Structure formats: C-alpha cells, structure tokens
View (tube, rainbow, N blue to C red):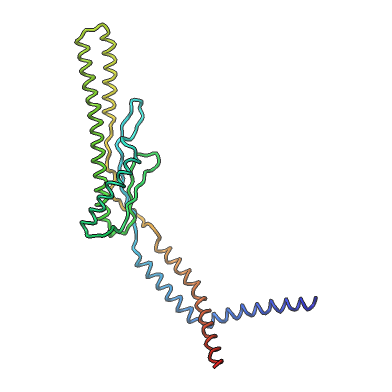
Length: 261
C-alpha cells in the first residue's frame, strides 16, 4: 500500500519535472520564438494591408405593376420569370460582350440576383474590388436597360389592350344612346360603369423602372483587415512555442548524433 503511494507520488513528480523541462526548453530558444513572432506579425500585417478591399455593388429594379378589377395589385410578370430571363439571356449576353470589348477570358467578378420576400423588386449585387466599379456599373446598367425595355413593351401591350376595350365600350355606349332602345337606360348604365372601370385600370398601370445602378456599399464586404490581423497574430502566438520546441528537438538530435560518432 505504501509502495503504491510512493510510486504514484514519484510519477507525479517526474511528470512535473517533464513539464518544467519543456518550459525551460522553450525559454532557452527565446530567440527562435522572437524571430517567429516578428516575422509572423510582419507577414500578417503586410497581407492585411495588401489585401484588396471588396465592396458590394447593388442595383435595384422595380417591376411594372397593374391593378386587377378586384383591386389587387400584381406584377406585370412574375419576379421569378424575370430573374430567369436575366440569368439566362441578358446577363449571359452582356457578360460575353463585356469580355470581348475588354479582351478578357472571364470577368473578375460575378453578378448575383435575388428577389426580396413579398416584393416586386429585382436586386442585382456584385462583391468586388472598387477598381472594377466601371465594369460592374456598365454590366448592371446594360442588363437593367434590356429588362426595362422588355417590361415597357409588355406594359405597352397591356395599355393598348385596355385602350382598345375602352374605345369599343365608348362606341357601344354612343350606339345605344342613338338607338332609342327600350332597355337603353340599363345598357347605358352598364357601359358607363365599364368605361369608369377601364379608365381606372388604365390610370393605375405603373411602369417598371430602374431604381438604382451599382450603388457601392459604405462598408467593405468579406473579411475585414482587423479580423485578418487578429487571426494571424493568434496563429503566430501558437506557432512560436512550437517552433522553439522544434529547435530544441533538433539540437538534442544533433548532440546525440555527435556523441554517437
């Protein structure tokens, strides 16, 4: 019983000595630690300062809307349909044109699209360095211009349809007034209500419009320089004692080799 207790205490004592030896070994190679700390800190700061700052450039398009006879406001086209058109037609063609114009094999940035929940907005956003602002603005503007033209054509078709219906109803009203029919009063009231409804629908048509083109965000996106510096310094602090232990191990191996010769 006494022997087991003594062995346990000796084991703990040996372990304490090994930990002390480890600390002493690290401190003996403080020069190695200093070099690692200085070089690691300098490299971290250099990388952070040279790292290009990326900003988010955002464009907005408000989808054309109309009001149904029931008073419900709807988009002239489904936002999902317009987003598919942007991705598969406009963006593909305009990206290719921009590459050819500037002699590029690929663009140094990407254009993403989204539709905010329960809204009639198309959002284009690009995260890139401010040095590409002109290209981003040109690409966003070309895409939204083509989208706006498409929306204008669709809205013109709807406006012409409602106008034709209004003109036809007015003609029918004039015809009934001139006919002198026995039920003319009922028909006149019906046509007048329809005319008022069509005029209201025409007045409530709202064209789509480009609300914003490649507006640069105030704060940079992505990893900040302070975050990079913090992570780099933490990594340097971890590597410094490991480097000292490696230097101690190398020195021990070198001494052992010299003794064995």
